[in-house]
Length: 120
Image (cartoon, rainbow, N blue to C red):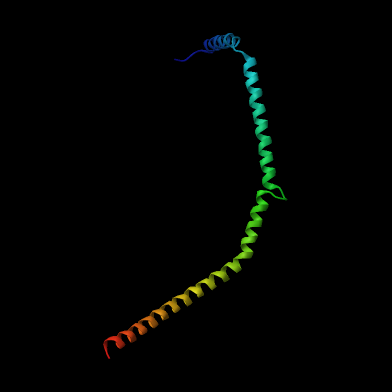
C-alpha cells in the first residue's frame, strides 16, 4: 500500500506527537544519574588500567623488567646447565659400567665357591 506525501507527512506528525506526549512521563533525572554513575565508573576503570600499565612498565621493578632479568639469568645459566647435564650422563655411564663389573665379579666368586664346594 503506497502512501501519498500528504498522508505520509500526516502519519509522521501524529507519530512524533505521540512520542512527545509519552516522553513527558519519562523521568530524565534518573537517566542522568545513571549516565553520571556510568561515566564515573568508566573514569575509575581507566585510572585502574593506568596504574596497572604503570606497574607493568615500571623501569625499576615492573613486570617487563622482571621477565627480562629472568630471561638473562636463564641464558647465563644455560652453559652451566649443559655442563652439569653432561657430567651427570658421564656419571650414569660410569655407574652402569661399575655395576656390570661388580656383577661379573660376583658371578666369578660364586663360581669359584661352587667349584670348591662341589668339585673337590
